Length: 108
Image (tube, rainbow, N blue to C red; front, side):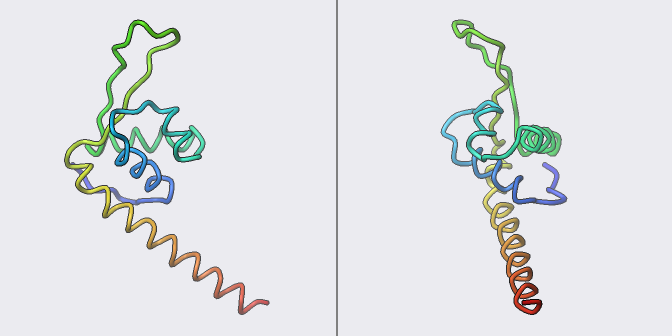
């Protein structure tokens, strides 16, 4: 597994949704769970797979109507590393938010 070069708030949200899922989830579920646009979630999933943090497979269900769904889950290594990556991304976000608040206070 390769390290994440950057853990954005959107990446943290996707990791959190995958980490808390009790079974593999399809992309649209992650879009809804994270309240992030598909144009953000799917590239994150692709990057997580490429780095070895996540795995995906096509759904086997043949009794369901509609197109097949791609199911995603964290790898064992990804699940182990996800909490630290989530915490790091949220710390960065908090520091940036505090900086913006301080700057806004100086300007006001």
